[in-house]
Amino acid sequence: MTTTEVNDSMRNGVDTATLFATLDAVKQAPQAASFQFRAHNEWLSGTHNRSTISDFFGVGEERAHERTFTFDADHPAVLVGQDHGPTPVEFVLHALAACLTAGLANIAAARKVKLTEVRSTVSGDIDLNGILGLDPEVRNGYQQITVRFTIKGDAPAERLRELVEQSRARSAVYDVITNGVPVTVEVDTP
Amino acid sequence: MTTTEVNDSMRNGVDTATLFATLDAVKQAPQAASFQFRAHNEWLSGTHNRSTISDFFGVGEERAHERTFTFDADHPAVLVGQDHGPTPVEFVLHALAACLTAGLANIAAARKVKLTEVRSTVSGDIDLNGILGLDPEVRNGYQQITVRFTIKGDAPAERLRELVEQSRARSAVYDVITNGVPVTVEVDTP
Image (cartoon, rainbow over all chains, first blue to last red; front, side):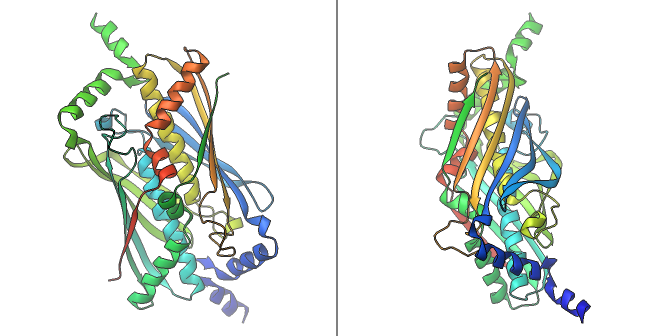
């Protein structure tokens, strides 16, 4: 019986028992849901720089990932860089794909849908006349972003589409990208 | 003389001669600045998924980075994941730091300021009552993001601050995050 119960709570690699317990815990103590995430970046040379991601605050205390994650960003040669990493704007597309996909897996698990494949391509169109300062009518950022999902699972197509719609409706990165966030920039020049 | 000229065109690891040549080339052919960036994502298990970044379109043709970059995203245990990578929202912070820093190095080079150190911490405050669906008054994404730069170089503090301000004013990721971008989500269920 225990095995059956454990198996039943694990779906799509999501521990739904823990997921629902976490929801209940936050309902009882809403302030536990106040998180602060951080990235620490160091310039290396030219357009090449490196972020480390480790510490964050959540559930009332300072925490750390199990290991420190390190990511390089750069420009390709055609954009006068050395191609030591993706461009910063490509990381935005990865963040969006990752957020929608993680949410999808959680929501499918909660709705007892077994997923067998989830793939997506996120593409962003940008006119660099904006950041190059050559055309004041052109914005700096993406003009539009398109996400294309391919999803397979043990539910009808309409049900699978509803999972994506719910994930979109609850995605942190989708909200950030479509609605914007106030950003403050502070500079220390010691 | 040649050596002197080459050295003079390289500043902060930025090849300013190529940078200005690129600007001139785009002035002559503005359509060369139409780029499309992409991330391809595959769900692995639970909140764990993986993006590959390689192909993009720019300067009139399909291109690829010198190698394929691969990034895992996940949730930490406290958010019911396995911590195989940063959360999607942390990649957004990395993208912002990387974009502002790359622009800063280019702008400093163009203005003949030699940078010796650029570090930043980007922090984002988020109330997970939003994505957990527990409080309809709380948004899904970050409520605010703060970027703190520490910059050293051979220019007065005021000049260094102006570099950051110009980088902010020309940053693709800053624009995306502060102003938002329309996102279309399409689903194929074969």
